[in-house]
Image 1 (cartoon, rainbow, N blue to C red):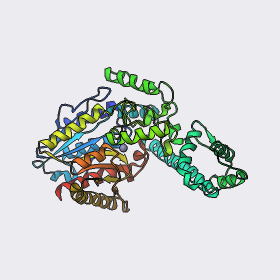
Image 2: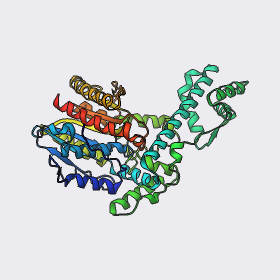
Image 3: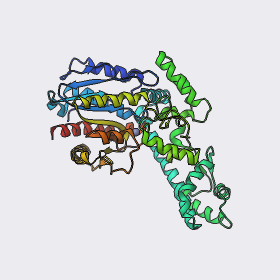
Length: 461
Ligand SMILES: [Zn+2]
């Protein structure tokens, strides 16, 4: 499997340099066409478009919908690089039958913000820094899980298990801004919730010790602390677009309600909108939630970040008081795919996200596409697992995501409207943005190669 896998953190300058080098590489076996951009981002960065192939069956690869999932952007460019060179299985790419469209960066605002911030902090070698980040991320996941499990145990003891979900939500709102936790503080919280805690403190203490083996724990998040020194100064004012980006970010961070470390893990575009959540279905769900809860925190390891205001995590709409509107990045993407389809040129699409080792392939309502999607997804996944087995002598299971209940993302929406509209969660190594870079040999490189091979398997079968 003779591929050339590049390994670097692609910031604004390096990404554009890589793309230029791919287009102008004299060793290309298949020419890369640079098209007019399909639109602009909210901070006016171009949404770039390239293609390889002359066929009528177009497969669209797009990356960076979530700006923090940087491996998605990296992957699309590496696919373009290796395909152009005719590396590995790509030497048999049916150039006359297929065209691959590359839209490497759908959300430049979020991506450039993330990578500028990362670059500012990244002083040591990328792999070791990324590995530390990965471990911290896991640690924080475990911390939150332990606390939530502890609350469950307390509820069990007190026979109030039926209000657990609400209690967990209230718990994290109550402890918003707290840096540590003790059994006494938990007891105070329960009293605040009008729960009778008489004689319960000892029980809480005992459970607390069972989980943490000490009477006080820190609530700070290690994966966020790595970015504590970041400020808006990490965005250089290179040109008008950069200045606009910085101005829009300044607006999001102006009230100090969104912590500055989130610049290094910026999902949204510069309007504070999450481009996958930016659809009418999720807009309605979120609006109802806002009506009930007024203030909403993110879940899990990011439960110290408010999402009921424009933030790095992003809302479904630029303003939840106003009618739903697609962000211009989504308008450009949806128009691009629709026009391709209207001309009879659409075959498949891959929406490349960061972590999970998953393929979203099953439409929720559209029965018509279920069978063909399932069939092709199986081919794709099987090949990935084969390559992992071959290169790593290890069984690693990429999976097809079970069918969801509701449409909540733009990815789900596309899958209802078009066949083979996959959403690919690339890396088995968790922890956007850096986790997937934490093990170059055993994870990062194989993720790239396995997905190249899987694409060719899908095309040839
Ligand atoms: Zn994502």
